[in-house]
Image 1: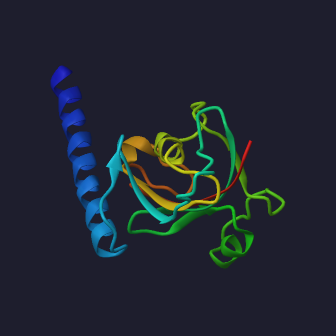
Image 2: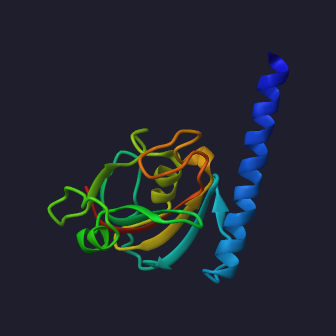
Length: 160
């Protein structure tokens, strides 16, 4: 029984390592950006507030986001943007056009998104990429297959 558990764990480690390699190739090739990995999350800033008034997202904050979520190398599976949802045959997010409100650092979000948001600030946009171990894990969740590396395109529109 122990050997079976160790074999499963090794497979997961191998899958995660391969996903990290794929993520790094995607960032440097397709996104043409430098690899910036911290705490398991790859961060590609699209817009950054470098002013002295930068308002960072911190644990305990409620952040409002516009987002698109995709499987690495696959399809869009969720978005807060109604027009994009409809174009892709997805159910629009019930946000009244105000984006998705999330409590950061509370354990209510998947780990990759939670960790990535804590690197962002009000008005900033970034791509957050991470392996399945920081996403939905080994489970099939909605349109996301098991062990899927994920990409979130996120814009922080407000912080409370």
